[in-house]
Image (cartoon, rainbow, N blue to C red; front, side, top):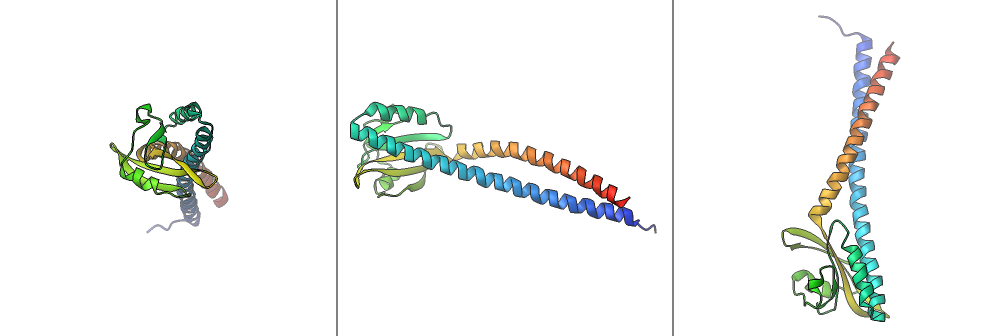
Length: 194
C-alpha cells in the first residue's frame, strides 16, 4: 500500500478548506443579496404610498384632480404595480390608475379592511384575478381628519420574478468570484507546499 505524501495531503486539505470558505461566503452573499432586494422593494413600495398620500392630500385640499391623475399616471409605469388608487372612507374611488374605476364603489374584502385603517399603514395580501397582490393602505389625513385612503397594490408574483432575475445576475457574479478564489487558493496551497 502506497502512502500519500505530506505535500499531497497539505494540498488536498488546503484545497478543501479554500473550497469550504468560498462556498460559505458565496451562499452568504447570495442570501444577503436576496434579503437586500426584498427590503429594497418593501421600502420603495412604502415610499410610493407615502408620496401618493402627500399628493392626494394636496389635490383634495386644492380640488386639483389633474395633479392626482398625473401622479397616478407616473405610478402606472412601475413594473410590479397592479393598481394605485385614492378612495373615500366608504369605498368610492376618487382616482385610480385604471380610469374606468373612477367613481366606482369598491366592495371587495381588501377594501372593507382598508376602510377600517385608522392612522397607520395597513399591509394586506389578497387575490386579484390570477395574482396575489400586496396591498398597502394609508389614510390621507388633514388636521387629524381623514379625507380619504391611498392604496397601492403590487403583484407578488411579478416581484418574485424581478427578485429572481436580479439574483440570477448575482449568482453568476458569485460563481465567477468563487471560481477565481478557488483557483487562487489552490495555487497558493501548491506554492506553500513546495
